[in-house]
Length: 164
Length: 191
Image (cartoon, rainbow over all chains, first blue to last red; front, side, top):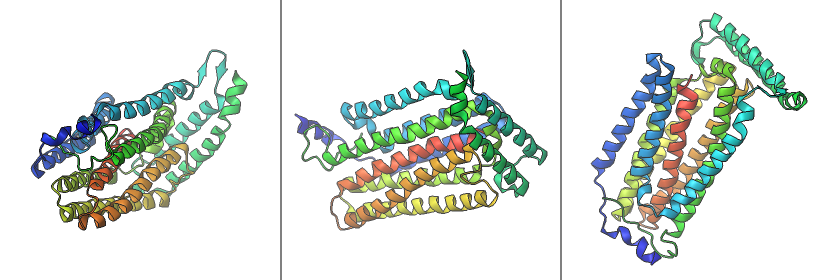
């Protein structure tokens, strides 16, 4: 039975090279859209073109390059199990990490880190912002300051616990 | 239209042994990268100050590396196609192209990191950069491992041996590509 299932694809044929080249070209078009999306200046457009297109690209690679649709359901269950574990981790932890205050508690250290980081960020703005290859040594200095903030962030846990 | 599996012996589950092992490996990788990227997303949302750091990543080099990895995925699937056609040397040729893509990716990454480190954006500069180097570094490690394994399999394929392994290493490589597909917007686009 199982061996028969393994042979079930025998009737299929191999795609021509041009088929895969077309898929690749489509992926490149999606890449261009995801890069140009932020240029429009709308946050929601950036989110859609960046992460929406990432999902589409991943789907295309899984379907046409990995041929996941031809695999038996068992493979899908294995992968789905991992995705469920990932979701469990995310939704179990996210509430504590993404919020810095709640009923009878406050994450003072995290708030202080944000304040320090934003203040350092204003300093970056004073330099005119820009990318890492701008060559502003002073900007790197700010990055180091943010690093000290991070170390303070290690104190997040005690502050968190103390706040309860 | 579809693919005919090459290795279909020892199949008690409907899935060949090697392919089942690869899918188990990839499912464990989902948990590894999923955990890492999930942690990044929650911190990125909870810490608006990270935006001040993420603007310094180099979108152009990130885009170039995405192009390289997508292209190497194309050559990986073309290697699989040649293996299906029992053309070992052809499969080895396309695996060689995929390895070239891996090398190109690592070269671009080394330029990118050198520039960032030279400007003080090191792994200890802030939590953002810590995530950045950890995520991209673990991914880069997978690229290196994949390239080494592909070299071995290309050598075998060139002699016409164990052609089913071409598909297996291809699955791994496409997964590495998918991880980058999600890393790219997280680290380079969503600023």
